[in-house]
Amino acid sequence: MRSHYCGGINEAHIDQEVTLCGWVHRRRDHGGVIFLDLRDRDGMAQVVVDPDTPESFALAEKVRSEYVVKVTGRVRRRPAGTENSNMPTGQVELLCKELAILNASATPPFPLDEYVDVGEDVRLRYRFVDLRRPEMINRLRFRSRVTSYIRNFLDSRGFMDVETPILTRATPEGARDYLVPSRTHEGAFFALPQSPQLFKQLLMVAGVDRYYQIAKCFRDEDLRADRQPEFTQVDIEASFIDEQTLMQLNEDMIRSLFRDVLSVELPEFPRMPYAEAMRRYGSDKPDLRIPLELVDVNDLVEGVEFKVFSGPAKDPKGRVAALRVPKGGELTRKQIDDYTRFVGIYGAKGLAYIKVNELAKGAEGLQSPIVKFLGDDVALAIMERVGAEDGDIVFFGADKATVVNEALGALRVKLGHDLKLLTCEWAPLWVVDFPMFEETPDGGLTAIHHPFTAPSCSPEELEANPAAALSRAYDMVLNGTELGGGSIRIHDETMQETVFRILGIDQAEARAKFGFLLDALKFGCPPHGGLAFGLDRLVMLMTGASSIRDVIAFPKTQSATCLMTQAPGEVDEKQLRELHIRLRRSAKAAEGNKAEGDKP
Ligand code: ASP
Image 1 (tube, rainbow, N blue to C red):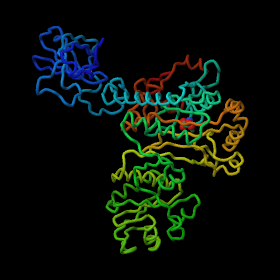
Image 2 (image 1 turned 90 degrees about the vertical axis):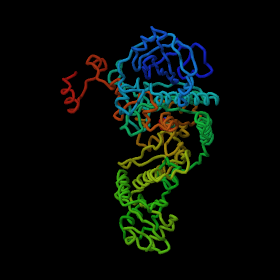
Image 3 (image 1 turned 60 degrees about the vertical axis):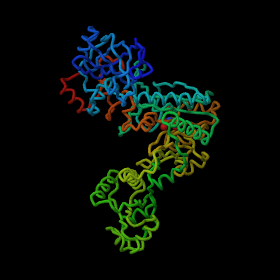
Image 4 (image 1 turned 135 degrees about the vertical axis):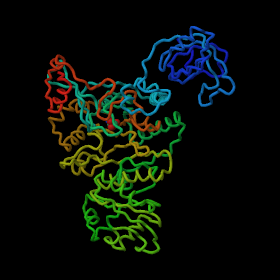
């Protein structure tokens, strides 16, 4: 139908006849002539319809915003003084010879020509209109470039794209499963994959050697700001490979991706043990753009009267850490109160601080409600340890280590942004040497990564001291966001059984849930490992979008619904019956239905 995209015409086409198709972005009636800004996914072109073409002119009078039209005409240079240098097609316009209205449009739910933020609900309900906005369509295009770059990269390195099932058994990644009832097997359910983890490992047993997939994953979690119940991973696995080679390969991929699509040269990816990341940044995904660090002062405050500090300092699970903020002495009382409330979100009971007015005056030069409780010597020793200078403020966290890490870790990032302390644009790193397990609130152990991750010790050592064992897992972190993570896997049956046992999965349960994996480990499983990148987050970071939803064509809301299709929806009684399902409605749901007129 068309000869060019609207955004594709320029001075090279002057005097040529072209046909454009698209949506009427804006129509301006200048008495004698009508201007149509015609838009398609590639951009915008100005069309001029004048009364010399009476039929087209009559049609042009009828068109409204978002009508779909086809225009054939001649490209000409815009009259001097009317060029628009903000528009790639701004030097030319199309003089209409023939206009056809291909479809009308109701008044759009929000104007596209003078778009103002209409609220995400409206945008999601009319996503098909929202995606017409250049900002949105460009993000989709960018995402497509990213996936195609990644595919080419992995293809060129010998990776094979293999699809894995969506209807499957539970694949544990630590979230709840989405379940699909089986019609043909009464009372049985499929689970949607939380990741292709087990299948990609089985592909290694099968000898595929190098696998990738741009895979949909499903996790029924309580949604946090940048989570989606279904999301996309770049999923990778390879055999006969160690973590160094895997990390290097993936680093190369991300580095060349940034170079190719963003013209960004990423700096070196340092490798940092998990323990160091927690100690210095209170986080296993530290934002290294921010030059603030947590400093342990347990040993200095163990003996002080001040129980708020000495208590956690003496507790093996406690931590007392200081965070020095250069020039932070200028923070006002109100700002400090706000930060105190902020750390409260993470469970901190307060936010002690010392302002450094004049170190030359010794403890006299420190301004703080807590110096008198710490004693002058201790206060000064802390100042020396953190390298305090006049004009700084030093914040403290004293609590269980988990609370201190979360609270000061988050405060560090917030201060970094609020005080504009970022030292660079991109700061990638690998976090390595994760512990195998972490404690659950009930005192049990759970896998930090997933139960198929190999430990860096023998099964005997693992069994003897599981809490201290490290894993062969690695996470790639960029600007404080986890881009992806993976591990070398267990390829030995005894080791896998040991891990299951430590996790409290007895033999019968292991057999029932993962019998196929244990079988596969018996039949010549090669050493292997891999990782997965969160594609949505990667694209969000690369485009600077503020929400993951902005880089997904049809995302769900925070409460895991689709405002456009109204999914999840109710189904009729017949379908439920076929699925052998009778609903147990909570009182709340029954109430809701009554209000809506007692739908079945
Ligand atoms: N399956 C893991 C995940 O989704 C990634 C991996 O270990 O490769 O986090």
